[in-house]
Amino acid sequence: MNRQDKKLRIAMVAACPFPANHGSPASIREMSEALVRQGHEVHIVTYPIKEDIPVDARVDIHRVHVPFLRNCGVKVGPSYEKFLFDPLMVIKLVWTIWKYKIDVIHAHNYEGALVGWLAKLFTGRPMLYNAVNSMADELPTYNFIKPKRFAVWLGEFLDNVVPRTGDFVTVVSDSLKTFLLGKKVPESRVVVVPAGVNLDMFDQGSGERVREKHGLQGRPLVVYTGTLEQFQRIDYLLQAMRDVVREMPEACLLLVGNIPHKANQALYTDMAASLGIGQSVRFIDSVSLDELPDYLAAADVTVVPRPECPGHPVKLLNYMAAGRPVVSFEGGAKGLHHMYNGYLVNDHDTAAFGEGVVALLRDPELAASLGRHARSTITGHFDWDTLTQGIVLIYWMMLEKRYDAAAHSELARYLHTDYLLRFVERDLPLSEGHTGSRVDRRQSSDRIGFAERRQVTFVGAEPLPQLNVKKSDGPAAEDPPIAGVSKVKARTC
Image (cartoon, rainbow, N blue to C red; front, side):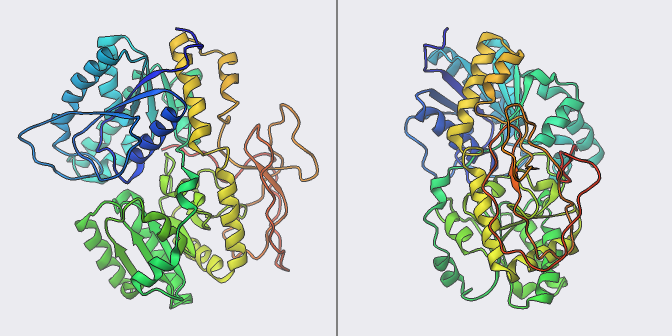
C-alpha cells in the first residue's frame, strides 16, 4: 500500500460501553468522527452496552452479543460481564478485520490491547495501543479484586506486559510516557497524543439555565464534572471546599456526575455533612453530554482534585474548551501552567487547593483571563482535527515499518515533543530548533495577586498569546536557580 491510497481502514477496539459520556468512550467517539471527516473508514468493535449519544453515521459499530445477559448498564472499571464480552470481542474483531480488509488495529485501554493483540496474532495486522493510565495504581481503587495486594500485583504485571503488545504506543500524557519508558518500552515506539476535544461543543453553553434550574442565582459556583470513583479524590475536594465555605459562606460545590454511583455518592454526602458543608454541596446525577456545556458555563471555577494522575483528564480538556478557570493539583494539570492558564497547587495540599478556589472567586478578572488562555491553549494543540492527522501518520509508520528519526520528524507537524508548557524569553521570538524553555517561575502555593506578561509555549511551537491581566502591587515570585525546569513536571506512578 502507498500513501496515495488516502483512505485507511481502521478497527477501533473499544472494550467498554460505547458510546458513553465519560473518559475513554468519549475520546474514542470523537477521535473516530475526526478520522471519518478526513476520509478514512472506521469500524468500532465494542460491547453491547451504550448510552443514547449520537455517533457520526459514517462510523461503523460492531457489537458483541450475549443473548442471556441483561443490559447491566454503564459502569466504570472491572465487572463480571467483561469476562464474557472480551473473548467475544476477539472473535468479532477478527471477523471485522477479514470482512472489511482492515489495515490497522487501534486498541484502547488494557482490555482493548489484549483483545487487539490476540486478533493481531490471527490476522497479522499492525496494532496501535492507546495507553490512558497505569493499572497498578488504579486497579486496587475499584475494590473489585481482593485481596488488594493481589490487585496491585496484577496491575504491575499488566503495566509490564500490555504496552509490549502493540507495534506502537500512544500515551495521553508526558508522565505516562515517562512511566512506560521506565518499563523499557522503546522510545522510538512511544509518542504522546493527548486526549482531544471538540471546541464547537462548548460555544453555546448557557449557565443561567443551570443556575435557574437548581436555584443557584448569585452564588459563587465551583463545578466538578465526571465520575465519583475513589481515585478521583472527591474527599480532597470536599476538604478544600470546607476552607472555601469558611471564607465564602455562599459558595456552592456542584458535583456533576455522568455515571451514577450510589454507594460513593452516599459516602461523600456523609463526608460533606461531617465537614459541616452539607448544605453547600450538590450532587447532580446522569447529566447528558448535551447538558455539559451549560453546567460548565455556570461555573465560576472548575476543579481537578486528582493528584498524581498519569493520564490526561478529559474533564480538564472540557473545562479548558469551555474557557473556564481551573484549580488543579499539579499531577492532574496536563497542559496547564500556573498563573498562565490555570491555578496549580502541590499534590495533596488541600489547604492550598481551597486557597486557589477562593483567590479566583474573589478575582473575576484574573479568573476570566486564565479561562481565556485555557481555551487558547486548546486550539491547534488539543483539537481532534490536529491530533488525528498525527495519528494517521503513526498508522503509516506501522504499515511501512518506519520508526526512525525522519518518521518522527513528520509527526512534529501535528504532535509536540511533549505537552508541558514553558516560559520563553519575552522579547525574543522562537528560532528554529529552539527548545522553548528559558527560566520558569516558582509555582507558589501562597495567595497570588499578580500575573506577569511572559510568553508561554510548548516545545517547538510558536508562543501562545500573552496573559492580559492587570498587575497588582503584590510581591513577585523569584526565579529558581535552575533554568528550563518547570515545577509542573512529568510524574511517574
